[in-house]
Image (tube, rainbow, N blue to C red; front, side, top):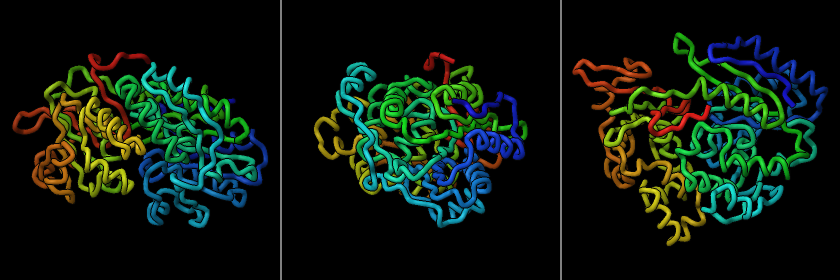
Length: 426
């Protein structure tokens, strides 16, 4: 069921149009007494989910009983982040998702299905876990709010990923990330239909039919002035609604470069990217565009750690970003990685597979720390003076010394590839 759909590669929603779209959908749904909202966390600040959540609060008021940011494995949002992202929404409505506890298992996806979708690579069961309040029968409406954009684990972010990963549990998150990594990130990114999505869809179809979930999905792009705007808005409860958003996102957020890129410079907003767990979107989203022997330079002024979770940070520091065969061997030999498959997946995702050079330029992590996980180190002050984010434009730039670079101001907003490494399936 699609309640609202509108968008286009050059379309730009006004605030009033968003208000009217949400009102139209709400009127179709009828009066509700107990509403739960599942928005993303601060790492998806640019999704406009904060603004939409605030509008939902203004519409439903006292019917909004709880707001649970779908943080997955990320750290809980701070009060200042909540205030910045969600505006006038009362702080006492927000709940923390604890991904290692407070869980309900709705059902089990059988190992035979995992084996089938993985092409015979994996053979485990997958638990369809959600935060227990998501499964609480008191809610007569659940809004899942977020942005559809290319994603390294599931292909295209949002839809039921927001439920089973965003509010999911340790085992389900670990195994879904590992499935995507083992199957191959470059075969997944930019596709709506992937092995991980098939697993999530199985869980939706078999175990979540009784949950009154409505998905509010945005597609975000930049206008001619460089401002982030909503290009598409899709509201509904099924895969078709998500597919429509994905189709537009691939037109808005995907860039096929005309030649492999020799040097890519990515800036990580210090308010958004404080770990390589998040900051490695700079690696994921550009890897199919960088030429063999090329270099990715990551300007990371806010980088303070590797993992958002203490144990995952420890594992990243211990094993480092090695090649896929090396990580698979580590998993085979070490129980601590078997028990933390999302960490193993992340180590695979963050590797260039020795195909190109990755240079991190942090302010807070040391040269020793950066090099210990397999990356090259450069001084932030020195490199940001040469590649000044305040002066660079997204896309190709030619510097005064004649060097050509490709600059990306926020890797979370898109996907870049060259046709030699991406088979266009749009």
